[in-house]
Length: 102
Image 1 (cartoon, rainbow, N blue to C red):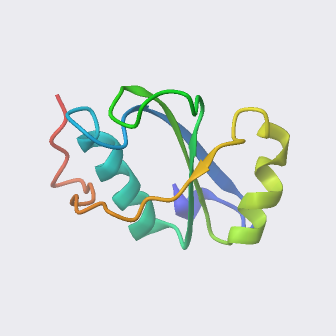
Image 2: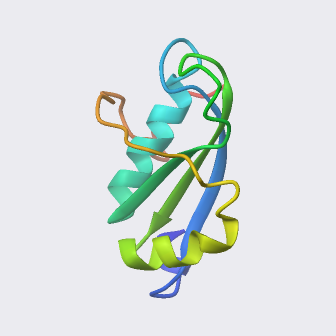
C-alpha cells in the first residue's frame, strides 16, 4: 500500500479488535505491521467509553509523514477524536509468510 500512496497520501483502516485481552492479538499485529511500513502511525478508539479489553472499532492511520496524516484526518475528526498511544505491544508484525488469521 505504501508504494501506491502519493507523498501526502494516507491509509485509514478500521480494525475490529481490542487493546488488551483475547480480542487484541490481530489488532496489535496489524498495528506492528503498520509501524514496519509507515513512518507515521496513529491509532484512534471510535468509542472511548468501551473498555480496553472489549472488541470494538479501532482506526489505524498510516502515512509517510505525520503532519500529512494529521492534516488529512481532519475531515474524519468526529470518528477520530480519541487518539490512543500503543506502547506495550509485543506482537509480531504480519507478512506474506506470517499471517495467522482464521
